[in-house]
Each structure stands twice: as structure tokens, then as C-alpha cells.
Image (cartoon, rainbow, N blue to C red; front, side, top):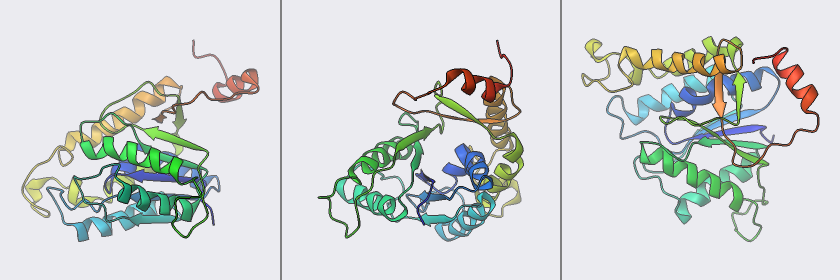
Length: 245
């Protein structure tokens, strides 16, 4: 069954942190969704790739996605190479998503920045028939970008107010990353993610973007192309239900 939305993340937990609320909301509306981690996160300071695979499965269940998969691209070495593009092309042609979600192209982590280029270019190339993968060519309608570390001025924000608790459950499925090292269950090294303040920052960001659209929680997205509106009067009236000025 073709997917309506397929989200790619450089590592397990990237999608959950950035846009899982939107995926959960889409699933609740009857859309078919999926998430693909390009790597297995084997360079993570805490936990192992096997532990993270189990956490990825539990997070996928919390997000209610129809498809979830981890590819074998080396952690720390994502690049828009021919071989890596072919891996992503195969996934796009297999699942035929209407839209693809990818990380924003500016980020502190090189894997996130390179994943953005890799997925965007693969989404275009997947539509070229002469690239042979023993599959029918297919090009998604749009690539939509979500922020990781660095923020951007969003093209639109999705209201996730009714789904924020489920988003937190998907994030907290990654116990190895969020468990404080004082408990020493997954290693005694503290990371940026394992600090208690990190999850609070995630919640604060959701509140921040929700406040921009007059809701409790929101997730921002960016598209490179202009968006078409045939009836701006109806769109703004039904979207906001009143002035935000």
C-alpha cells in the first residue's frame, strides 16, 4: 500500500524528536505513514545498535506508523553518494509516498545536513526511469523539511495539541538516550540528550511554535517551493477561526 507520508531521519530518534506529533496526527486521520532511519545509530555514546533497534520498534508503535525500517548506511558517514542515493531511491519506489519528510539542510551534526541533501536528491532521482532498481519510477509530490538543532522560519506549522503526549511517549521509548547516567543503566557518560533539561527544551519548542498559531503545541515545517492556495479567504478563516493580529 502506498504511503501518504514517509519520514527519513539520519538516526533512530531524529524523526521522533522533530515531527512525530505530525505523524501521529496523520495516522489518526487515516493516512498511511512510515519512518526510515538511514543509520542504526551505532556511534551513539549510550546504548548499542541492538538496544536502539528495539527502542526504534517501540517508538514506531507509539507513532502508529504503517512502515518502519533501519537502513545500513554507516553512522557518522552519511553522504549524497551514488550508493546511498540508490538505497533511498529503492525505499521511495517501494513505498511511493505522496510526501517525504527530511531534516533541514543546515545543522550542527553533519549526518543531519547530509541526510537532507541525500533524501532530497534521491526523491527527485527516484522519478527517473533510467535509474534501474527493478522497480517502477516514482517521484513524491513534495519534500518537506523539519528542524533538528537549527531553527528556520517555517512555511507552515502543524497543530499537534491533541497528540503531544503521544509524541513524548515515542521520544521516551529511547530509554538508552534519555535515561540519566546517574542510574548507570546504559552507561555513565552524560550526553546532551541524557540531561533532564533536554526533554524540557523539546517541550518548550513545541509550545513556542504552537503559540505562533494560537494553539498549545505545534511542529514547524519548511518547503522550498511556493505553496498554492485557491481560496485564501476560506483557508485563513478555517485555519485560525479568528484573527491572530
